[in-house]
Length: 405
Image 1 (cartoon, rainbow, N blue to C red):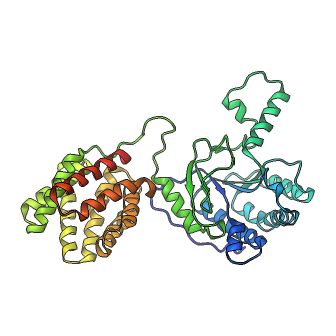
Image 2: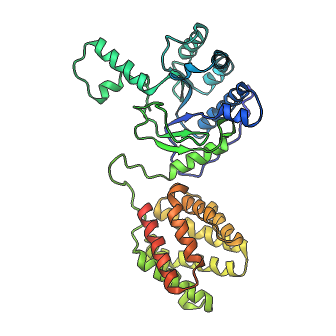
Image 3: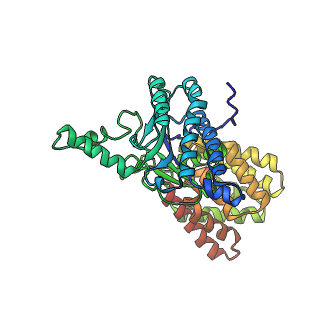
């Protein structure tokens, strides 16, 4: 079987969601923008679905839920509905063998009383033939609505004669009742829309949301990778406390040390410069004295290479620095990737978007969450007044600590 797909590489330590939910919005808008029939948009969307399903399995995602047709979509034209139902049948016909090969169990989530009999027969066959697969789950949500799922579960409870239920009992009546990962970890909606519209309303109560501006036919496996990396950077508390504490520094102390090593670098980079750099990395990353000495040597070396525009040497020194930082902080970045980010910022000049991406990759939070810190860092870098620069650096490190610590 030819399963052409792009190999997806994730950094070691990336936290991959167990359950990914995708709301594939924008098929019709994609087609209209290109002067095509809206049905062509749905066709391209189904092609994107196949590539994304394969990529999600390659990344180690266990459960993928895709919304194909909502309980509210019946108000669309008969032509569009008929075309969609035929596409669903075709999707099952084309990929059932692949699901078997990859160990994918197929579930239909949603109502079954309004779907065409021919589609129901294919769904039933797919569910039966993949029932023993355990490696992955594919939830095909057709004629599905989150409220409807809850109402149907409630009616089943009433019919069962139960007088009182708790969450665990209630969940046993939902469409995802017998799945190992019923709760959504990451929910993606394409086309710039920022709402869930009720998909897996109960199951996605604590889902991390990711809003993709492009229409669904343009949502590629590489863009899915970016969404997974963004998810991996987030700190999930579930209403409780953080399980990790990465940064314990005093922002005033770090800002002061940064200004001091910058000043010494500007006037000659002597022993004072190296001493301040060592103290800077020790205080910022919580390193031991010996580790700080080694890490400080690498950072000082990188900064000196930067001033000489010796980019290869600077990158090597930063890579060694971040290898120490990664081990100490337990973050899921790749030292070489972070070093490359930073050197490119040095080469091309600081940009706020570039710094957001760099901070997100380095400290493992989303670019949206990095916006405040990135803005302050740019202001600090460009400020020539020492007093104002000190204020910006202190605010930068405070914002960073508030986000990461």
